Length: 130
Image (tube, rainbow, N blue to C red; front, side, top):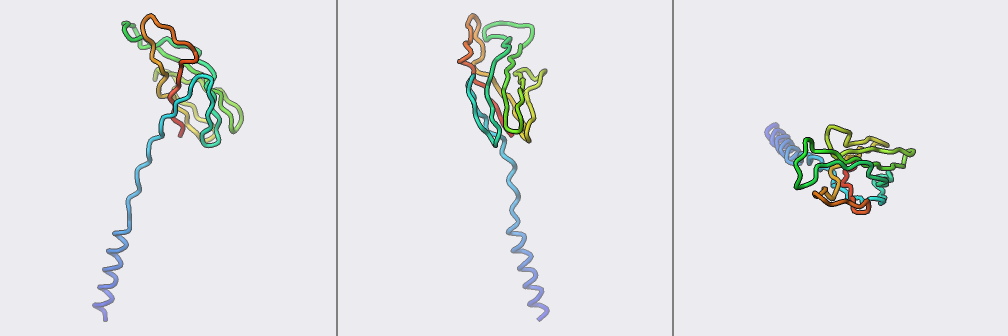
């Protein structure tokens, strides 16, 4: 009888170990593309790409003393109204936290080309929202 009990306990212990699945690592947020003047809703947060206030990035085909920076303004609403100023250069803020979300500017497209001007309606902000 004792032998059967030990065998049963051993089997139950093995079954409980087999059912323990490791948790999947969290997936990184997917990039979201937002055109200049566009608006999106993400998790109860409304994000509007209001403006590009500066684009001094060193154009392709040029040699510059520093890589430059592009600065954008996002108008945010959901838990009140906020303006987020985000930058492409990591020396300046690239993220903004509001209403339990972290918004990060990953890229601003298109990248400048030497001798060409980018119209406002051509800009696309690549963002992540966590």
